[in-house]
Image (cartoon, rainbow, N blue to C red; front, side):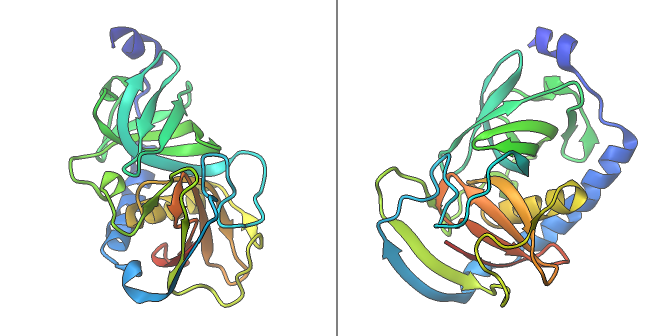
Length: 239
């Protein structure tokens, strides 16, 4: 662990923590909602969409890395990063860089804070189930990002995929529509989606024509599309 601390310890700047703290407030408000309570339809299909490399749910999958993230428990460490396991059982490879920043809760931290068994939230550039980390936050126990959610259906190869819609889906939404976003908007939308539906990997965030966001998730059988409004609160989800 000492070699990780010497070679890769980065202290988060005050400005970075200020941004992170703001987004945490948004996520806290979001996680208190219950989008699953507004179910409008439920059915099953034999699709296995949503696997590690899948676009999920029959959507027009977009190639190339994009802003996203995931959360889970650190399962192993390496000199270049670590692996985590989400609450739905998905394995995620996290690559760290000299620009990666770290926090423990809302306080600045270094790479040495990442140890096996710690719950973490990782934000960065996602390519399938590999994330190049921009920010890693070691979370306090019981945080919503690593909780097991009854609403989330874990991915299982060959198993029927749940097909249902809950909450509010933007009226003008069509799969594959919208513009991929990055920066603060992608970060806040990713955090909101992972707090409401923990267990998957966000591989892109798309802004829709009405200003809302579609957060696309892989690594689970449901949900693949999580909808977040302009206030970064989850309003619905579907397959």
